[in-house]
Image (cartoon, rainbow, N blue to C red; front, side):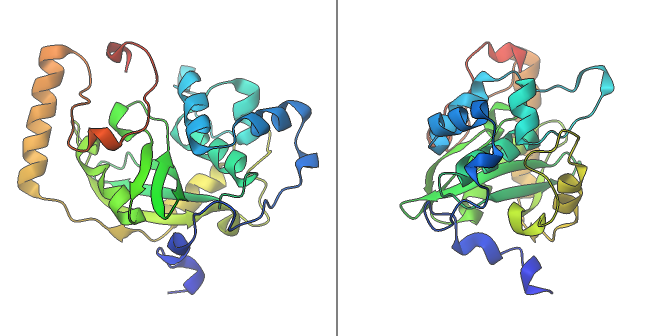
Length: 243
């Protein structure tokens, strides 16, 4: 395998200050520069994204907006939120790393990852409460990825693999930060990128799926009472019934 495509390659990075910003601030608009200056930590970015409406792609119009697209439209789905976080925190010295999940039902998920004081955390948005960000308390990206395994199990989902990807390296020569059009090549790159397998228990998956179905039937909302819940970042405010 080409070393550049080694799914474990970027995992040695992630700490703030190890990677200089690769985009000159002059490339950003005044509005974007002010926003970036304010959102100078992963937690600040997570809170900002939590406050945005989730992009449900109404009228069947799929989108994959760049950082600039998210700023201009004021909403984001999971991958759009990741691109926003990546570009914003890149300007504060964080490497442009994302973690991609593969699922048995092909409903994959992507999160932005970073390292703080040697521990890994994430920034993310999702229509599922358990697939949002994580506090920087995990020893490795794999340990971080495993914290998503249980909440991923719903009616059809089950994590089968993960990959850590340096977006800037993989998208070199492609305008993914500021494009006014959809940046579908980013999604295609993530789909094609080699993922490391995650083996999960058939028995536990069946138990979790049965519990999830029963909870949804009884309460009409998605559950949040998972093992390791104390390691999650803040969730968007609002009625869980709207998830």
